[in-house]
Length: 229
Image 1: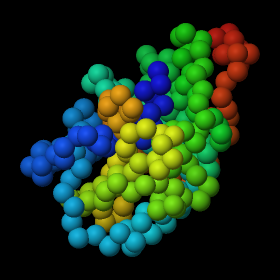
Image 2 (image 1 turned 30 degrees about the vertical axis):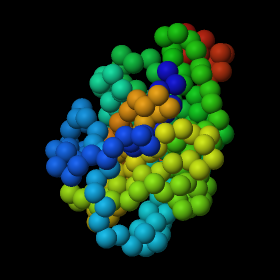
Image 3 (image 1 turned 135 degrees about the vertical axis):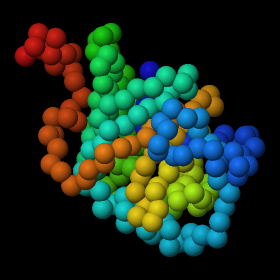
């Protein structure tokens, strides 16, 4: 279940992995095929790093609320879908479609995975998950993360990050559609080298979201839910 928490971020190669050549990257369309295998970091182009970071910071900080459909490809190749709800700062919910019993909720300080079938809730600090970089009150990529790489190719901009503190293991790559730099998908490689991919579609921003979406259920809540209350 912890791999679900890690999947709330993006793709990256482990430090030991060799870079993938451009022709391999060209075979993958970042959003159109959510079941495709992730690619390595695309080749670098001439990029004004400071200007790109400023644009990305502005885009991400402008997101107050967001709702989208998501497709998640797990390390074993299995596909899950559902609805993502996000409210900055600190709040997020992945509501998986049936028959999955899983819900992933961030309430501002904690990220929890609820398995309604097993009646369990696993929790870890929000700061130790990759979604921290999306949910901060004030996002500053250059200060918040170690920038491993930037690349531009096939109409997409790729930003690869690593946690400089070492609290989050692995590397993360966000994929933004140009020219508007809309976040389209992300991949993450966890501490075991396993990769999870999340792609977004039907993205909406600026709506009002029910605060109850971001409440982590306690045992009493789960009992009431099963009784239909």
